[in-house]
Length: 489
Image 1 (cartoon, rainbow, N blue to C red):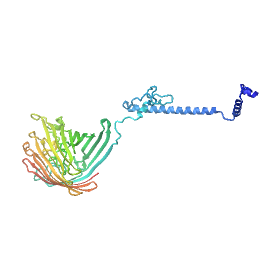
Image 2: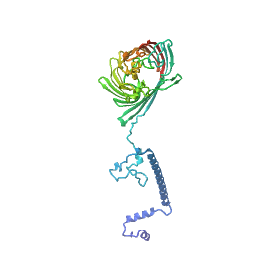
Image 3: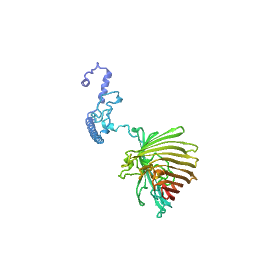
Image 4: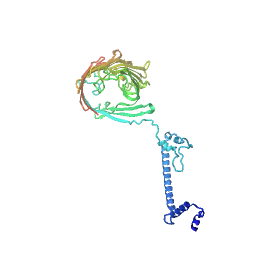
């Protein structure tokens, strides 16, 4: 019994239950023999050293990342710094508030708290919606051939026919100046501007000077536009609000000063369009640069008189459009006006000369293949809007020139490849406002032909019987033929 008393001194025979003695014996038999298994102390120490090494590496990486993010925030500037994140984790139902960016012993932010750098990477409300911007390049390649029996003021940019003399005959011209290149921009949608859709256009051709092998680029359109559901704002150069239509023929100068008015100019434009019953009503207004077209400088001081007036021109148009008896072709009717001013230094009396004009435009589909289009206008001092035969003020008398005119044409689609457009234009200045040598009337009868075989290819042949009358001089009478070949892209 001695061994049992040595190991278990409290276990004495007769006093200890037999089942306890049996359990103690089993434990003694199951005890490991010394040296039979390896000592776990060394394995535990190695694991501890490895964990410490990994924690040290993580802390080093965290410090480097924090330094890098701090440097990036400093470069971005204070306007990009995020607002402090919530102090406690909302998911815990409460907790001790900690400053944003505080780190615990692990080198990581406390649970539920974002550091300043992490908050910068968190999703934010974007100022611009994720609509991708798109750019579309378009244009056309074109060659024009112009033949005149009586010389116009310019064979490529005709505005009137010169009065005949013994040394003036006809002319022949060939040019690619109406070749065109444009860019349409579909920009982002701006949430900060009420979801405005941003768009833009840049369009150029070569019809503004230079030699035939050294063309000069001309800006036709260059603007940005913000559009909402029914309202839009445009800033840049584009067509006038006043007199929106133009004839089919004479793509060089659109029969300006011979019956058609309105041009392109820098302007700030606003437009509203809304449904009205079965149709649509539109109201557009603009302020534009006075003197942008005629660049009158009657006082010869180097400043255009329109710019010298220190006032922009003002334009308005009210229009209505709806589909009538021809499917997918809208009837439209509109009325427009403009008001402008010129300032001339040294003029006797009031040196401010007003300019104004009123225009009515009509587009009427008659059948699927036939439509009528035209405009009528009247006003005074219209040269900056291509009216009055190109005469706004008579220099000798400083008298404002009044005028009236318009144009009309039928457009007939003969078949799927050929359409024809006969028409008439006229511009009639008031003779009482003119002096000898002035143009008293500028008009033309014409027939335009368009052939479209397909593939964006178009051929044209236009004939114009053009006449310009003069105060005290012989009239200019021209038979003009314009041939062109173009391919759009």
